[in-house]
Amino acid sequence: MPGHATADGRSAPLGHGGEAAHTGAGATPAGEDPRGPSAAPPAPPPPPQPPSASPARPDGSERPRSAVSSDRRDGASATAGSADGGPFSPAGGDGAGAPSGSAGSGRPPSVAGTDPREDPTTPPAPAPAPAAAGTPPSCEGGALAGVPPRLGSAGGGNAAAPSSPAGGGGNPADRPPVAAGGGPTSAGDDAPGAAAHSARPLVPAQAPRGGVVGDGPPTYDAEPTALPAAEADGLDQLVADTVLDGARYGTYTLRAVSVRGDSARFRGEPRRDALLTARFGTGPAALVLVAVAGGIRGSDTAHLAAADACRWIGRAVGRSHARLAEDIRAGRRGDLKSGLHRLTDRSLGKLRARAAELGVEPEVYTAGLRCLLLSADPACRTRVFFGVGGGGLFRLRDGAWQDLEPPLPDRADVTGAPVVGFGSAVPEATPEGDRLTMDLGIPTGPSPYIETPPPPAAEPFRFRASVARPGDTLLLCSQGLAAPVRGEAALAKELAERWRGPKAPGMAQFLADTQLRVKGYADDRTAVAVWEA
Image 1 (cartoon, rainbow, N blue to C red):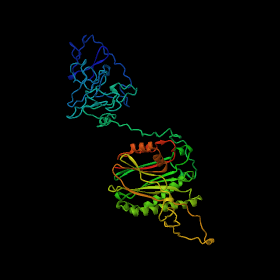
Image 2 (image 1 turned 30 degrees about the vertical axis):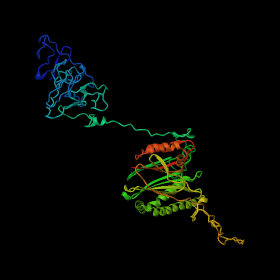
Image 3 (image 1 turned 90 degrees about the vertical axis):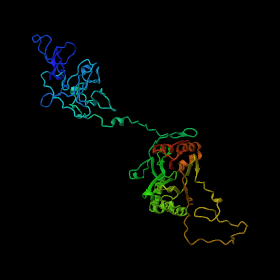
Image 4 (image 1 turned 60 degrees about the vertical axis):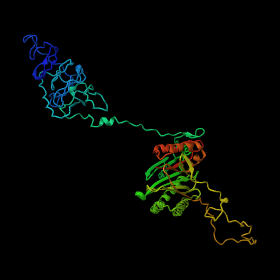
C-alpha cells in the first residue's frame, strides 16, 4: 500500500493491519492530517530517483520493488523471512538484530513490500508468500535475516550484493528480488562448506636449501651462462642442462638427477653425463634400472657416447629383466655377476662399432657406465651394482658414509691367473729360482699373418650385491660428485646431515642438495640415491 505523504515530501510507512505507523506520543490516526482536511496541502511529487534506483523493463514499466527492502538513509536494512514468516528489525541500526517493534528502535519497522521512498501513485508490489515451516531464513546480498551483512567481503563469508551500474551499489532497491523464506540466493553466495574450506590453514612452501661448502667461493656462477651450440640438422643431439627423476617401489624411495657442471655452463658445452631410469615388468616382479654414463673430457661426441651407453645397456637389461629379477630375489649372485658382465661387454662393444661408423677413435667415443638394479618386491632388499669406469658407490648408515667401492689395486701387485685386460704377467722364474724358459738365441722370423694393433686395456668390471637395512641411504654417482665427496669433508658431512633417516627429500630439495658447490669441483654431477624405509 502506498504510504501517506508527509510535509517534507517523504512517504510515511504504514504499520501492521493497515494503520499508520506511530512515530511518537499523540500521533494522528491513520488517514487524518493534524491540520484538518481543509488545511492539508496537496502532496508534492516525490524526488526524482537516480537511474540505478529502479531499472526499467524493456517495455518501459518500472521493475517491482524487492520484497525485502531497506532504507539506507538511516543506516539500517530490513529483511523478512524468518522460519515462521515474522519480520525482523533492520540490521546495523539502533536495534540491530531485535524483532520488529522492539524497544530501542528509533523508528517502527516498515512492512515487507513497502518503501517510504516509493511514489504514492505506484501500485505496491505483491506481498511475498508465507514461508513454509523449517525453511531457512532468506538472504539479502548473502546475509541472513537479522544478521548484519558483511558488505564488501572478498571471501570467507557470504558475498556482497551486486553493485549498481553507477558503481555505488548502496541502494537495496537495485538488487534482484529475493523470495522471503528461503528463495534462491544470488550467484555470489558461497556454497555449503566454503567457509570451512577458507579457514583451512595454508602451509607455506619451503624453498630448497642450496649453499656453498669448503674454503672460499667457487670460480664460476651458480646459474647457467651459455647454451651449447646447435645445428639445424642435429637438434636430436641436444642435451638438457638438468634431468630430474624419482619413484617409490616396495620399501625404498628413488631420487635421480644429472646436472651440467659450472664449467660447462660457463663455456657453453653440453652435459657429458647421461642418466637413464627405466622400469621393466609390473607388480612385485618388476625391475628398476638406473644407468649413469660419463663421456670423455675434451671430446665433442662425449655426450653422444654417454647417451648410447645408457640406451644400449637399458635395451640389454630390458630383454632379460624377467631372469634378472628372479635371480635378484633368489640371491643368485654368481649368475648375476656373470650375466651382467656379458651384457656390459656387449654394450661397450657397440660403442666401439659406433665409433668406427663415425670415423673416430674408439678411445674417444667411449664412456664409463655404472648401473643399479632394484627389485620392486617389498620383501626383497637386495641392491645390485655393476659397471665399468670411474665414479662412486657410497652408503650412509648410522650417520656415517661408507665407501662400498674400494680403490683398484695396481696391476703390478696382482698375482694369479691373468684375465682379459687385467692382471700381472707370467713370472719368468718360480720362487725357487728355476727358469721356466731358455733363450737359445735363435731369431724369430716375421709372422705370416697380418697382425692388428692390440685393443686397449679394458676397464675392470665392477660388481657388488648388498642387502639394505631400514634407514640406509645408497648413493651411486658419477666422478663429478664422487671426487668432492671423497676430497671435501665438509660436503660429505653436509650431505650426511641432509640425507640421514628413512625419509627421502623432495625432488626440488634433492636437486639443490646435489648442487652444493665446492671450490675446485666444477664437473657434471649425476647422482642416484635410494632411501630405505
